Amino acid sequence: MKYKISEQCYAIGKTIIKPDKKFSFLAYLITGEANVLIDTLPDRAASMLTEEIASIIGEKPLDAIILNHSEEDHSGALPDVLQRYPETPIFCTAACKKRLTGELPKANFQVVETGEALECGEYKFTFYETPGLHWDDNMVTFWNTNNILFPNDLFGQYAAAEPPVDHDYPEDTLLDAAERYYDKVFEPASKAEKEIVLDLVNLPIQMIAPGHGLVLENKFPAIMTLYRDKIK
Ligand SMILES: [Fe+2]
Ligand SMILES: [Fe+2]
Image (cartoon, rainbow, N blue to C red):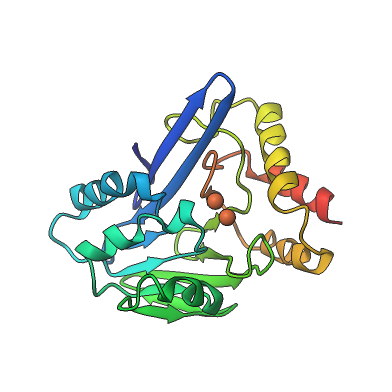
């Protein structure tokens, strides 16, 4: 599944919609003067992801990969992507690099820290580490150029739709899906680890594009309020 969430950004994902289970895995490809992939997909979706990337950028290079988290559902397709784009630098936390270096010894990992920015073509991205939410290696990426937050697991929901956007999704159902995801994945974190989110919600966010569930185009204020209430 491929869907344009903004003029320069595609969501590429795998959707599960069954009567008893709704979930999705989402990666993002930003195109233009520079082509930047944010996160990947599970290994079982690797060929679909690499084909979709090639269908969008053609023979152009993939200039950067931003990997917010190393868990298999976001990094499983990375070896296949690197097979096609072996030189592409991968921007991630030190903990993420440590977790993946054994499997990918030749990969060009570039370690980033909170507040560091990446300028790529006409685009600027800023990274914020979120250790403990929910692994030691998680971070989120804010695309300053378009005010879109790519938080990976954070703000994820047990929800799915095609296209993967929140327009027509009932807000109470979406909030319930976000709360169930929060309780399962983030509730075990410490208060100090969770409080990083209270800073993130002050960014000038216009859209949230998470790794699971739906892209939050107009219901993100409600989900940010949910997180604020859960954390305080
Ligand atoms: Fe995860
Ligand atoms: Fe995940």
